[in-house]
Length: 150
Image (tube, rainbow, N blue to C red; front, side):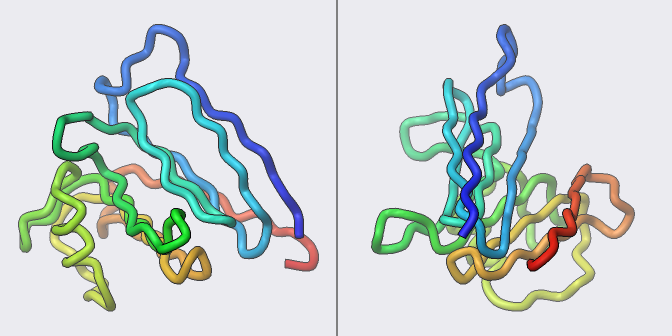
């Protein structure tokens, strides 16, 4: 199995509260090791995937677009990144993890009413779903690399 090591750090004099951002990677079989430095962001990862996003810190919870469901081994078996909003039900970037997981659990319709970017990782990284609003207003950029043997 291949292994990739990635280091991530903020640009100097840049505040995470200025912009919403997220970046991530997923591979069907390679181990992805991510090292993050600094404050103002949240990282959720599994063996073959990671997502990093901006966040706001408060006393109750780290609030932001990234939500993870921990597994028994201390890692994450699933994650949802939701940036934007839906009109019905009323969900937005800073909704709670419980609200996000309750709504996006299982199969939902393909036609959502809102402006959003969504990345959903399930089954301990075996399944990834990427969606954006119907008109592509909310930015979501991705790249698929063709690798021989994968």
